[in-house]
Length: 127
Image 1: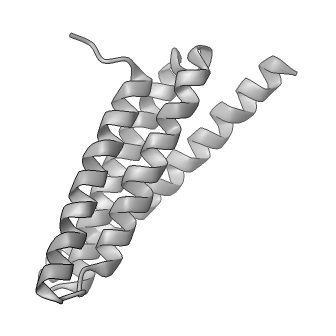
Image 2: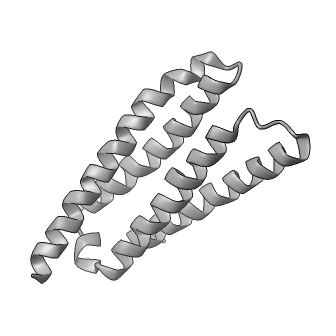
């Protein structure tokens, strides 16, 4: 079974939302907000960005059908995962994990630059 690209983005975003909410609930119940930055990035980069990408591709099937859109998915997903792991390492005792922060941030930036290109191309097609 193949899941269409828009729904891959949306499902990944929902999984990030569940993880982000779970972390937020854990922090609240333990009154330990050490990982607040991780929580924020999981929710913003993971949930909000990925889901919004999916919504765009759902409304722009021509854009979703390209190889660049597939590359965008993997870049965005890996970036969000690596960034979250890297922030865990930078704020917690697992300093070795902090090495993931820079590649995660760069992948996340690359993902947004790809998205800029995809949206600009879609705008050009409809103009």
